[in-house]
Image (cartoon, rainbow, N blue to C red; front, side, top):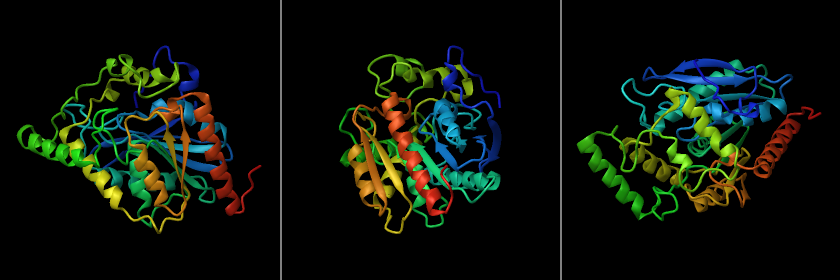
Length: 332
């Protein structure tokens, strides 16, 4: 892997020093980039799944926080983004379908299982936004391997335009799906959706910040992506829009009554991308579903201020300690 650490990026955002890169290949022949870190005498294995268009490396500070707590960390870039393969011809954020992404995630979990030093410790899973959607879909299958789940600002229902009342699960969602389908017939499913374009640092550095409330962490994403051309993925295609609308409707109908796994959704009080109401509704449908809200947080909750991040880390520590106790393992 040729990953360039950005100039000007503070050391705390680099991630632990002992990262190991690996590659998986999916059914489409795409190489998927996998990264793992090992802690001494690990108390748990933790999977950290990114959101849309996020390279896993931008979570370096979180990876370090987890390793310092004694947790092994495992991360994978979704196909079409980060350091995984998309198409040889362009880097739009297209899709193999969300169903196929879910199969890739199952393949990744199997890979994690094969590399774990001990199956006695808990396997804890974390996901942000698109990653949170995928983890919700993953645990709907009774054969899932998650001992605990913590997701932030998940894509359960989303606004097509931030701060605008056009939601994927509203009547506008049906209209947007039909529009995307019509355009795809003319332009192709891998054509950009309306308002989509190639990656540009101006997308975050101009206008109001809807992602982070921290003056330093808000720049981490652009630094990582700007330094690494392969990670410079544009906005979604028509195919991704169609598939994501269908996926949210599927999740709305999914039965979770069987799910006994602890499942927590962290909600950002100043969210304008995902619909918070849908997050509360999803947690309420799960026997062990919980929500915790951080009123000042914005969408990229792990890139927010220390009080937000420390609150979430404390919850994860508590979850893992309970899982270890239930297995008869010491927390000292």
